[in-house]
Image (cartoon, rainbow, N blue to C red; front, side, top):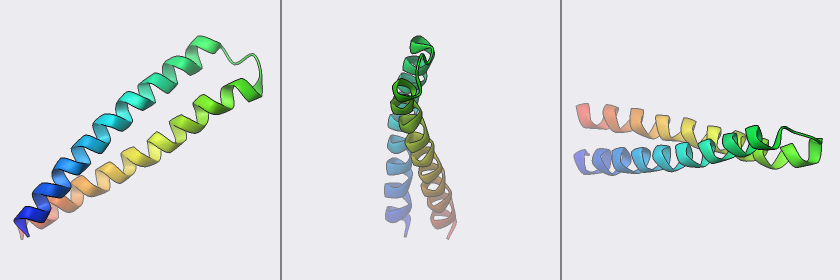
Length: 71
């Protein structure tokens, strides 16, 4: 169980780190464009939504790792 906990911890940290970088890039792109049209903003907003979901998945993995490590 401890090995699974460490794998989940590592995967959760890596996923959160990657999603954070991608979210920051999309946020910078969103702020730089200024949204002159809905079509141009939809790409950046879609990426921010998907990386937000990835961050939530990362938090769930980290929580599962903590629960498994305490067993």
